[in-house]
Length: 169
Image 1: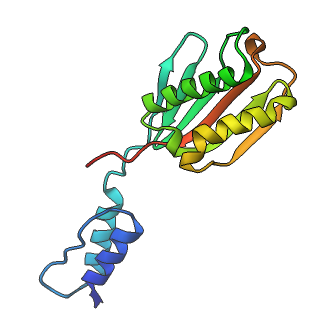
Image 2: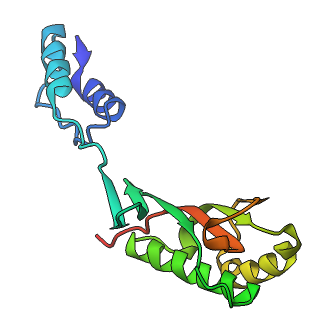
Image 3: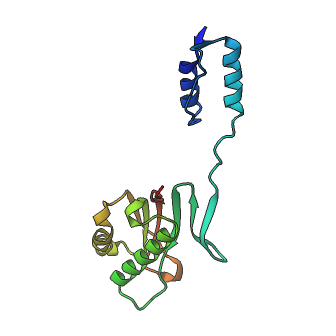
């Protein structure tokens, strides 16, 4: 005979059922009872798969998509040819932050950042502004590349991946 409490605990943990593994009064059961327990556990309804949610969808693209606890923010850039580079960086980070907040995330939950610069000579100015803005949260991994041209001839574009903040119970 097999101890049902041990088997139920293993099944619940192994199948991620989240059950209490309460056993009947008898400490041991027959193999056929175990088979019934296994069949019952296998037939239980699994947790629903995450659904993709588009954040601020537009005609051409959404500002971000959320899948489960992850947020994938599209490239953010600003169409303001008269602004200086520092203003562009601030405006792009403002736009990115607004999108992340609308998604339930924020600059404090960034997991990865992708930065596209039209001119590598702007890297030091970008990095200083970025660290001032993001550094208080710890700077996440980042890829920064120079590109030949960005939309609207913008000097910078930033996309990111972030984690949704924990929700209050």
